[in-house]
Image 1 (cartoon, rainbow, N blue to C red):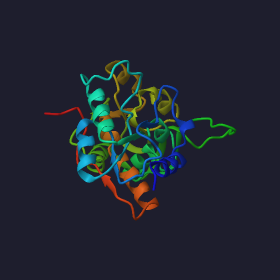
Image 2 (cartoon, one colour; image 1 turned 45 degrees about the horizontal axis):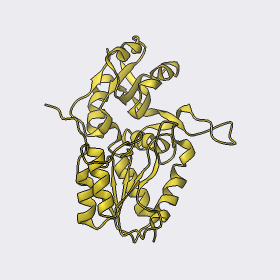
Image 3 (cartoon, rainbow, N blue to C red; image 1 turned 135 degrees about the vertical axis):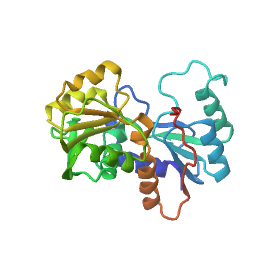
Length: 265
C-alpha cells in the first residue's frame, strides 16, 4: 500500500477545499508514491514524534497541525520546525497534515469528536461554510448541540473536566442557572463568540480567548476556555479510529507523546 492510499482516504473525510485560505493542509514532507510501512497519528509534528515513528517502524506521520504553516526561507536546524523536517527527510518519513479541513468537516471532524465527548444531541454547524457547487453546506466552523437534559452550572463544569480529562478551565461570569444549549469549537475559536451569542446558546466552549475577548460575553452567555491542546487532543483518537477501521490489517499507532507546549502548576 502506498502513502497516497492513506492520503486519498483522509481527503475523502476532510476534502482540501474545506481548509481555510491561510492553512497548509496536505502532504508537507515526503513522496506520496512511497510504500507505506506504518502510520503514526499525532496532534503536532516534533522531533520526538519523528523519533517515535522511527522506533515504531512508521514512515508516515499524520498530524492535525501543519509542521510548516508559512513559508520557510532557511532549513538549517536552528528552529524546532527545521529540526523536525531535517530529521524526517533524513529518515524517509512523510508528514501529512489534516488541519482546518478537518475542523470544518461536520461528520468525522474535530468538533463532532468534541461534541461526542460531551454527549451532545441534535448537533449542527455553528457557521456553515459554502462548498463548491453547493448553496446549503452542512460543513463549517464550530458546532452547536444540546445536552440530553439541562444541567446545573456547577455540575456542568465538573462534567466538562471529567469528559475532557482536564483539571482546570477559564470562564466568564456565571450568568446561567442551567446549561442546555452548547456551542463549541476545537482550537482557536474566539472568532465565533458573536455567532454563539446570536444562536442564544448557554455556553460557548473553545480555546485561545484573549483577555479583552472575554468581555464579549456581555452577560449573555458563559465563555469557557479549556486550552488549545485540550480542546483538540481527542482528534488523535478520531484519526486513529478512522484509519484503523479503513485499513484494518495495517499498522496504525497513537503517539505516546503529549506535544502540548503549555504546562500548568
